[in-house]
Amino acid sequence: MRINSSTTDMIKLVISDIDGTLVPDGSGEGALNEEYFRQIERLCDKGVRFVACSGRQFMSMYKLMRPVADKIYFACEGGGYICDGDRNVLYKQVLDPETVIEIIHDAKKIPQLDIMVAGLKQSYCRSRDSELYRWLVNGYGFDIEAVGDLEAGVDDDVTKVSLYHKDAAEELTKDSFRPKWEKRVKTILAGKQWLDCVSMQSGKGNAVAFLQDYLNVTKDETVIFGDNENDIEMFAYAGTSYAVKNAREEVKLAANEVCGEMLDDGVLKVLKTI
Image 1 (cartoon, one colour):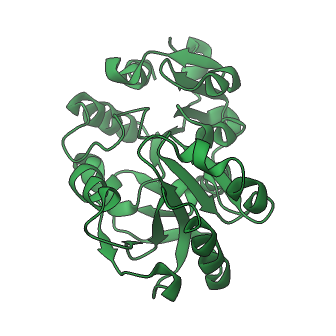
Image 2 (cartoon, rainbow, N blue to C red):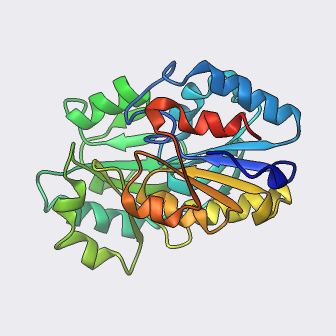
């Protein structure tokens, strides 16, 4: 698919999810097709801003996008904060410490789940000897510290609490956890492994709205790519929204267009038409 030729000259902002959209979940530095960097540089040279928007932390995203990191913006932790390549924080939405502790307490009632707390400085988990820790460090390239009992709190501004299971986060949280918490925080599925809990004022949609205002860009000048439930709210702020072919069905229904699969560099093919 390509953007209509009548709108290509209007594009000023391109925003893309990462996992499931640009690279497979758990991919680290070097995983992204290098042609993406050349296309992003070309767009930046023409005055088009590029934003990587993901549930990942800044350091993980920075490593993945390193060749163009100084040219783009990063909307991190599912839109919990936004920064540039020098890690200057432009925007943040944090959870209050009491809410964080309550979420962790309830998550621990589901023993199959592991827990990650995302802060502005770094991320935190309970144990180095866990599947979650090894996957985040060896796969995503996270900066993460094992602190033992997360209910004791962390010395950081917390933007997100994520509940993890290798393939059943949605199923394990649907009966008790989500019904209790969805009126107090945003509970957003980010792939089959993650349920993210963020501030009601957070989320990818609000992050896009901030960026459009900050960069003086309109909806019609914005193109957005995604694949999962947490990307749908972004689409409302796009003149043109794309779901990759491997996206969840509800995401494809919410998007204006469906482009090629992630593994076939579907997003890259659209970028080349801008």
